[in-house]
Length: 407
Image 1 (cartoon, rainbow, N blue to C red):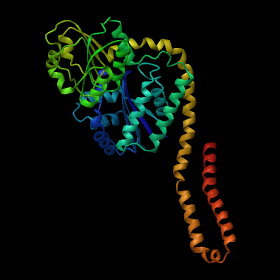
Image 2 (image 1 turned 180 degrees about the horizontal axis):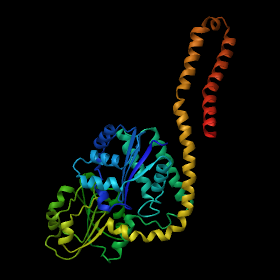
Image 3 (image 1 turned 60 degrees about the vertical axis):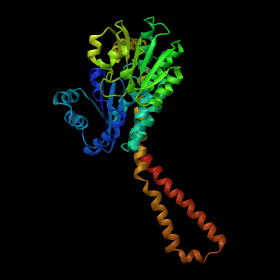
Image 4 (image 1 turned 135 degrees about the vertical axis):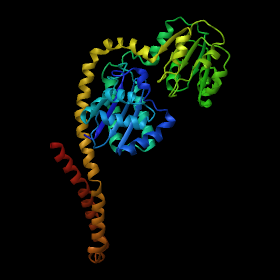
């Protein structure tokens, strides 16, 4: 288990916008992560990116220190200067072995999240694994770890009140917007049709908002969300020509740079100098900083939501002790599960060897003797051999597991 490593870049050590620098657009992940795995000879690799963390799950027998972290970031982001590389190398949280397992369970159980009790992290971890599995960069070790981690996280949510009255980034954003007394017929421009904006607009529609315009890089996704909202759909390129104005702008795309610059924003407001509400849930931010500084904007960002979400820690503090107990028990249990799996992998050759010995015995060594038997005797002999084959396959594995677990 000591070959499991996790490199975590979180809101505890870095600003949210700095974490955004480690974001890799979904379309670029496959090539870049495969290249990273091959460059360092990792056995397995998984990449997780959320609004307040980026994590790398790595399986390798080689140690990973701050210097190695710098090399990894430099390889993955060759355009970054020494100052940025040093920033990430010095602020990476490095976990190994049982500590890595414990950390991942805490993350997936939301104990380590910006917002304690946020269930969304389970979906994010699962999707990250599925993506990396599709890239061919994960293997049996990470598969087993993720499966067990998700099972434990579900147990945490079921057996504790940590998720009671959950407050996700989306619901925090909605409640912040609700407190501003925005009229229900306000013009709402939605940029991005991913999970975050789908959830956000569901809140809005549920509470009576009616006027939506949806923009997305893939028009079909914009159209699908717009249909759900009874709104209008546009391609992302049409944003720079949109002339219907807006009162509320909600943006969350997977872009690795700001997509709403001075030119686009000037077009959107159509000369209207009144204050606009902008909810920017993207990492990195979709709104260019110059736009925020030069215009009258009531700006709600993930960074802002992070600050107000700290109040949730007190509400759920009483549950943390219970959750920690579950997690500690889970880590110990996983050690046994991991050992069992190593025995299974090491002894995968046993069934094949037993079948090979059986085949040689029946077809070569004792072929003449078997031919001399009558049908009833041959059938009985076949039953005896099949029975012994099953026992010779199962018993060594069972005994090996028992011996290993006792040790």
